[in-house]
Length: 411
Ligand SMILES: [Zn+2]
Image 1 (cartoon, rainbow, N blue to C red):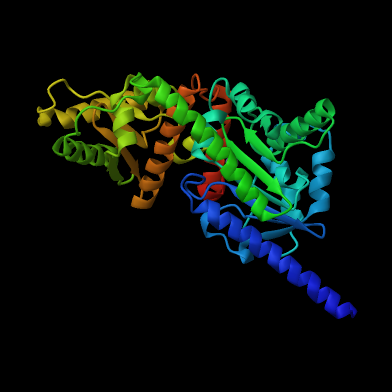
Image 2 (image 1 turned 45 degrees about the horizontal axis):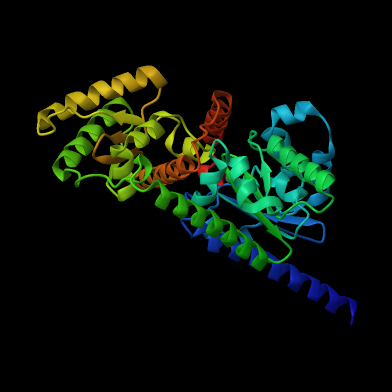
């Protein structure tokens, strides 16, 4: 074979691998079980180059041309450096090295902030998603034990740390200590506490199979627990249908009150079974008030939803405006922000944002957090993020916002 033909074959292989990675991203990015708001990321390594999803492009709409080629060597070197100052400064150090490693001009576009764990996992393809069912385990107080009972040595548990360099280092540490203790290669499936799933493989098909296997196993386990709970608070069906008329009045009152205090808001109402469940059950109220459980929840819905207690006589519709105004004032005094999510006791939930699309994304992400919370409760209890973990994401998100980076790239 001539030199030219060999080069041609190499470039064809590269093109095929990058297209395969993009297809994997779209398959899982379109699946609401695995991704909401475009969250998650994907990469493929070939010939010393890492092709990774850029920040700000949703997983479900990723094309092969979107994947950013980065030189693997300087990124691997950054991981090897033992400096703790780097670990503390987190994403800034990672991003400057990653931007310098670009092999193709990309303007302002930045690679996913999670680029480093893609570098260190020694498999051709790496897919990271936020599956609802998997996060029920990852957000359970006793998640590490549940994961071990269900999967044994087939998955690696990674305790929660801040995103960026600290997360990459925690993953490297977990892999190394597994390999030292068990004398075998670390598993290709990782559960990230309070965050999500990583599946890696030299073939994209192995990642699909592993991701579905993990989801299927946890789903079966939860279904068994739900049958066992049978009539307990967490499994009870909410009574009656919510009042459409009251919901409409509230929607309008919220729009007026919120818009008067900030930019004009679009408000969407949701009375799907999960929304009614959270608004009706005592467990739902505890989830709403208990603090955020995943970084995604903070990024898309803010840390603190408003729990709106309705007057006992709900037919007193003229009370609606007064109730909403008073509740918003109290919420602002307590949290210094207006709520994106409002859960009205007994009715359902409202999401308020600058556009319909943002309001719908906030609603979807919040409903996901609620499903995660109900699942984690069945597994023994929900772990809310610690105050310093929550504040890190709040500040990180505020900074990303100032830079104009779309939240879709949070990963
Ligand atoms: Zn993530």
